[in-house]
Length: 212
Ligand code: FE2
Image 1 (cartoon, rainbow, N blue to C red):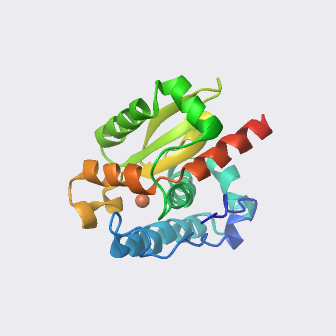
Image 2 (tube, rainbow, N blue to C red):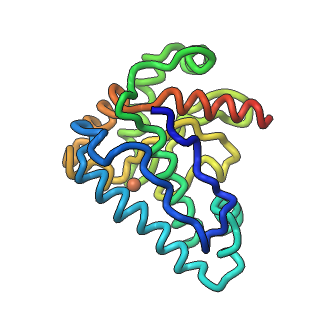
């Protein structure tokens, strides 16, 4: 499925709506079960947006778009806004027909910057699995033009470092505990093998190149 690239973040927070899931809630099963997606999207993701709206109500930030809030705010408001973005990006990083390997320019860049796709994959799993506590693992295009794997804590994301995110995987326990209990490694292995949307990553890379 060719999914909407990213939501329109110019909409003021006061009027922002949760971006729809780009597939049915049972579409990622058996790797990520329907109940996990239901809770993750309806409770956690929607909860972050609702709490954000409440936190900025009657303040000037309510008239800012989500990316402006992420770039200008700190503390609770930053955390809530970043979690809305991170989850939008996570759902779009996955696809029921995903997995496999990238092709074209993205594949060449991965070979150049990591040695091979296999080396990228094992490093990505190592970073994501080894991340201490709650957070995110990302494939990003860094400012020097190279692709990098980064992990961020809690709600933090690559936008705060002016890096361009290409793909992300949520490593908060709520992303996998119902399906895999404490086996984060198995969740990550299945996401990598069956769900990562390399077309989404390739389009993000292309858009970043057009902007620079
Ligand atoms: Fe999450």
